[in-house]
Image (cartoon, rainbow, N blue to C red; front, top):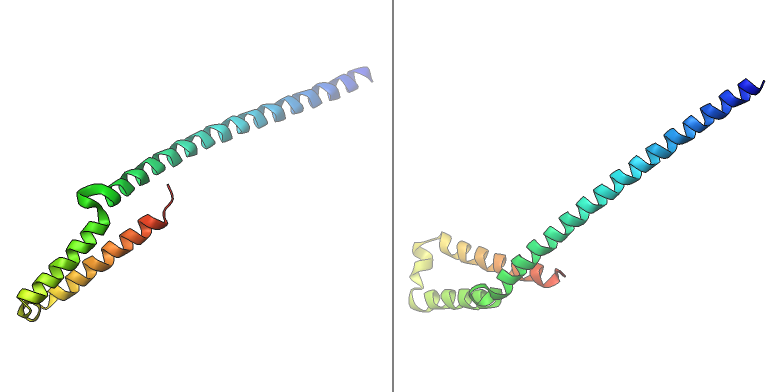
Length: 113
């Protein structure tokens, strides 16, 4: 009977050891995964900061680009109003650029890095 209990005890210890080892391996894998995710988040934040810097400062920043775009449209309208009739896509292209600049500005303003 003692051999039976010893066998049961050894089997229980083996099962417990296996379970602990699996838990440890799982914990290690989760830790490595979290570290990888943290690195990816850090890289994404750095990339967003770079994009934000371009939007805020490059060639005067997005605000300057929007104002200059409006000045270009005003200059064309004031000096060559027929150009819009001669080139039907011009109005669409200029409007699309204006929408893009404004959407980019709105996205950058709402993004907290």
